[in-house]
Length: 152
Image (cartoon, rainbow, N blue to C red; front, side, top):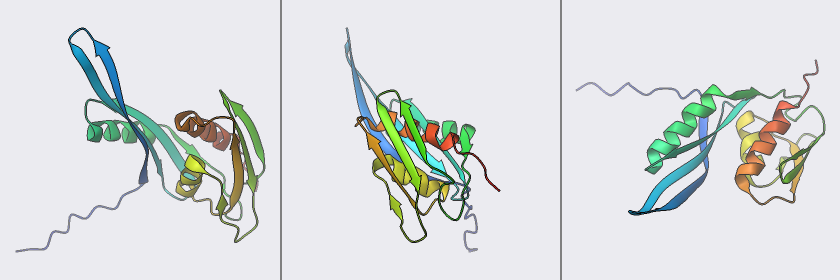
C-alpha cells in the first residue's frame, strides 16, 4: 500500500467565532436553523469574515467560509503592528485600535483578538465600548481594518 500523500496545504486559517441556533415559530411547529460566523486569514495581511445559515451546523460553516473567501480585506502591517490609531463608531459599538511596541502582544478582547491574529498582527491594543453583540463587533472591527492607510 502506498502512503496517502493527499495532504493539502490550507491557504487560509479558519476560526469559528459564533454558532447560533435560531428557532422560528410556524403553524406546523418550530423551524430550526443554525447560523455560523467564521473568520479566515493567511497571517500575511489578508483577513475576511462570513456569516452562513443552514439547517445544520457544517453546511452553515462551509457557507460562511466561502463568503469570507470572496470578501477578503488587506490589512497593512508595519513592524508587526497596525500602522496608526483608528477610532470608529459602527451601529451600537465604538472601536479604538492603537499600535503597540514590539513584545506587547495583542491587548484586545473578544473577536478583535482573533481577527488581528488571523491578519498577522502581533502587537496592538484596543477597546470595544458599548456593544456586547459579537456579530456587530466583528463587522465593526472589519470596518476599522479597512480604514488603515498604507505607509511605506
